[in-house]
Image (cartoon, rainbow, N blue to C red; front, top):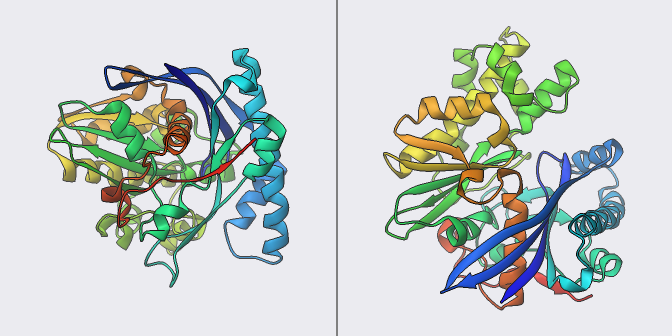
Length: 370
């Protein structure tokens, strides 16, 4: 038996909405996950600006958030209809949509007195405009059980990438996170720190480009030792898991504070930021095991400079994009939210307490019927 689900997500890079149509099937108890169609639905510059403005405290937040919630719901619905059109699949053929929404504030345990996480993209609007039952709000049940509500992908990685060897899966989006899949069956995961968000910010500020294609600008520079040391001395990197982070911690102000009193060429700062991403990931991988397979997904998998830095820091590991393991690196997270929707619709648990720190496993998300 096969089922079709759609996964929708927009990450901390806020570059587009990923829409992924996934076909799930089971053979002798083994889950099969096939991407039928996928696309990146553009986010307009004005909407991106509105999203980023809500990622930090400001005036009239409630009014701005309420309107943006509905507007993003409309855009998520448009992304859904676009991927269905590309696949030539009718909405009635899809069991459900799994929508992560757009995170605008994530305050994990320890950062404020009462932890919370806010994602926008009204699932009622998505269900109404697509005619497809929508599952959303995946993080808050885990947080209600004392967890971080993040990262959410390790449970999916365990379902589709587990093998009898030590494997690590790293997603490099705006932030980066690692999933440790030990050969003995143990699963652990956490956010390692910044991924592409500051790299994108810096190249846009100095070169007017949305991102550093292939990491070419970073590759032209040289990491600045003192700046690298200042950045990596942030207490987040040495904090024990479970842990999660976002733009609230790793943002332009964080970079500016570290650069104070230093004169560093812009290209060298870009190289230093790339080294921070690679070093924080590699440290996590080294802590897990001495060698194995590292599967990389997210936009960082297409950054050849970043992949080179990872291979240099992890000589005993094979480092490759998840393309080589059955799922296009660009669409792993989107497929993951399709899987989470399937778990919810089947009444199955979707979190991994060893990763998030929650008290127990739980069914995640709310169901918004079409």
